[in-house]
Image 1 (tube, rainbow, N blue to C red):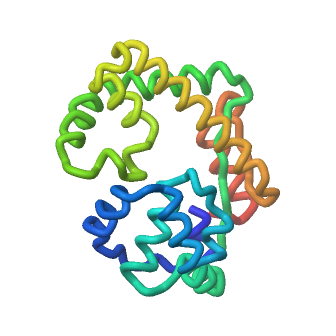
Image 2 (cartoon, rainbow, N blue to C red):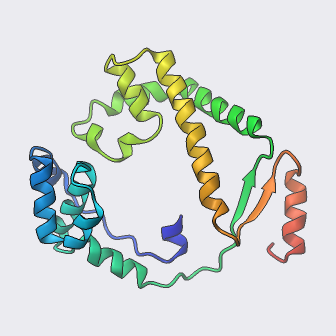
Length: 201
């Protein structure tokens, strides 16, 4: 969201599948030293043990000829074209939020999340992608690998979801310009009325 609202440019995604596969076969320390030669600034910000981020930075420079540092500089140079109002919905009663997180996971399971993960695991190279580290995917992959029972995987998803919701709240609280509404105190119409009074609708 910050990328969109700040006016950052989204670059075309290069087809780096073959490059990625070749890089994953190499030692992480060797890869980090190679990155340090090609993009010293990016290497200084990435721990050598974080092989995934090292490989992503190498993918960019090897496929496009542009370093991650150069790409980030071009993005930051772009001004936002939008006038932004951020509206955040919260719950004063944290138990309500936790219960909603649990219900969301149960609904995802009921609508076929396990089948989705099982089908995705059949695609070569997808397990190593950043997207597959998302909440729900990695836990169910562990279950399908036989590393834990299904009920434990579902509980881990619920725990991770609640932790993520807490991090989101902390993140948005840093934005002093955001408007906050507690849904357990005001209904949707009251929020709309307040926004109209502020001339935001």
